[in-house]
Image 1 (cartoon, rainbow, N blue to C red):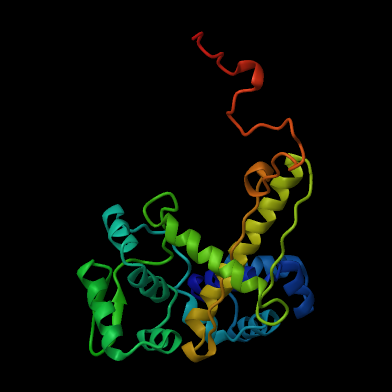
Image 2: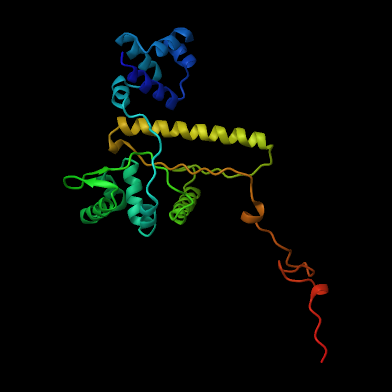
Length: 267
């Protein structure tokens, strides 16, 4: 069997959270047997079908994704980011294209006319981000995934979209979204463990999405957003308290105390 098949199958197992031990239990064989198959990257077709069935994935889907593993992140030139910063709608069209939306899918989602969609695509072509084809077809000229510069000119737009998403999630709890927010005191070592586990979960979500995007028709896909922030809480910045309103002795920050007030000059 082609080694690429096993690489694609390993990505699928990782995306689904299936370990070699779990796969062996489902197949009724020993864990060393499963490890040997993946190490040698060779088995009969019926065994490969059995592995796919145990993993809960169709063989044809694995074959369809075996040359489409997530690659290294790519970057957009700083000058292009600067120009996109002045055209939020154009940036959002490009982001949706990079998320595997078709132009028709973007039109349906955003309620755009064909003329608007074509003009957006043409503007992206002028920036060297897409190549136009027949009709409304467009091919990305930058490989995904894309890593944006969050400290660059696009920062205000990314802050806005994440704030908008959090506001939407809070108002759609239990129906369409999950929102979790809390603060706890813990050891830095515990916080580091939590951070690593969250990053691993995010990586798994990306793998699952990658697999779905290459094995599922667009009408079967729904756009989801993951926004995660975790760090030592700057309470004074996000939850400012300030002096009590009845604290007569309180002074605004930077205001000198009575003892330091300049004395009036003699007449």
